[in-house]
Image (cartoon, rainbow, N blue to C red):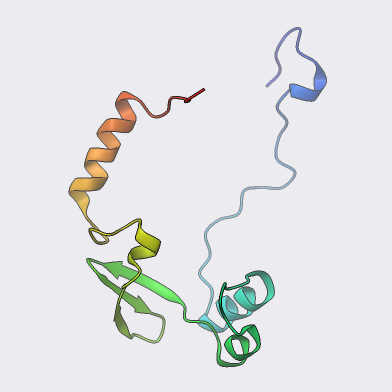
Length: 108
């Protein structure tokens, strides 16, 4: 797509590669990616990488499940952004309705 009278530097271009599809990885692959690319705050990275990070695969209410099937309470509430629990359809629906009405407004 091009626009008339627009400088070349703001004209949209096609992506360099085709969009990547979602692909599931094994727990070992996720742990390797985590060790290579993520720094966990307040963690002993050597010990964490030797043991392998916990891979969370599912959430419902106040619970999380890891890739080993362990059910745990999310005491951090997703760092305080899901303090009413995961999977609350009524909250997702309310957010959807609000986003249809006004998805964004700047504060400047």
